[in-house]
Image (tube, rainbow, N blue to C red; front, side, top):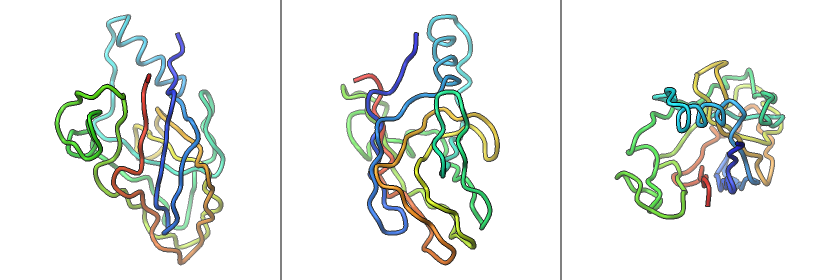
Length: 168
């Protein structure tokens, strides 16, 4: 059973410009982990910390895409917690999910290092389970790509900007 996100919306402020994302998806890796956990009594193994990554070529369900590299780029660690990710009842909530929309988002600003070289045209973002390498769990294409160059302001996602919805 393939479980995809029906809507993965992102409205982000990246170097001062607003972004949105096209519908995104769980990767095959994440889908398999969820099926095994829900139906086959295996440990989900969800990470204690998510690492937000940027891409110049989008990942797919089964490929890694091309992640930004060099020029001080690094994934940004965000601890999996009620404080850092909103409950489904509303953006900014810090209690267990009780909403009916299946939507969550970041509660705090997610800021990448300032670029010290050209990063290229960023077209996607993803949640991964490691600071380098690791596995991509969720990915989405931006509706508006952004060229990030040496000397640009540190790219960031404002609170409630990295928003995604599951099964609604």
